[in-house]
Image 1 (tube, protein in one colour):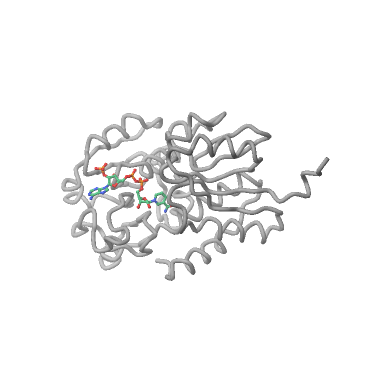
Image 2 (tube, rainbow, N blue to C red; image 1 turned 30 degrees about the vertical axis):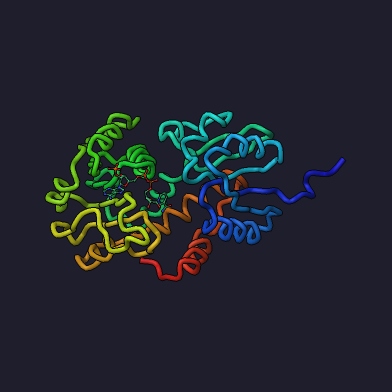
Length: 286
Ligand code: NAP
């Protein structure tokens, strides 16, 4: 019999594409720093291969994985148990293999909130928040902000009906309105925190912005969850208006750290993870 304690535990990310994923670098660094005998690999899994990949995770005894585009929703029926936050969000980004039982979690929303907290000048309860976008990431962040006590969270989106649906489906009580991008643009001076969650402005369309910030107040905190580029055109405009800005690298490393904690019981050094990400992206944080 082989003693399983002597084997290297394997973790990974499944997605398509995953070739440029920064997750192996940050998780392998954290394993080394904490003297944990483990290795993290990026597994390219095509849409039609997801079920086989999940069977493979069990068969090979892979201890846990991250799940990224396009599998975050499709993986749910293939897992044995879904934690309540992930169930409400309807997406999983972290899987833990507990003795052959695969449990799904979602750390995106909590990761965003952890990255935002050091910048808050008032509590979430007292802040008026505008979210731009109503896609998968927006859903995770909106539900987590509401669960964390935020009450005034308006959502604006190109497709307003998707924002309306998010508000209807949110498990926590909020005073939220669904707005068009144009309506939100006019009312920007109402908001203390603005959370940009659309893919507008992402490489290679780096000049694009979801809306213009003419009416924003300079005391606002403006976050963009995009991290490629690190400082989007949207954040650049907010900085010019005197706002506090926050890029998407913070959310990325915090969601990773929370996943790492689910797998190992240890919370890694987030600032070291952040340094690695910044080096890989070749930039300086906002
Ligand atoms: P998604 O589910 O596809 O949602 C995309 C959102 O962008 C929707 O609200 C969509 O509006 C809007 N949108 C896209 N193109 C648009 C356009 N040309 N004009 C107006 N609106 C447009 O994507 P997602 O998974 O939420 O990801 C969104 C972004 O977040 C991506 O850039 C992703 O890289 C980033 N992200 C970052 C992290 C992190 O850790 N920092 C984590 C997750 C995601 P409609 O509803 O009208 O289509």
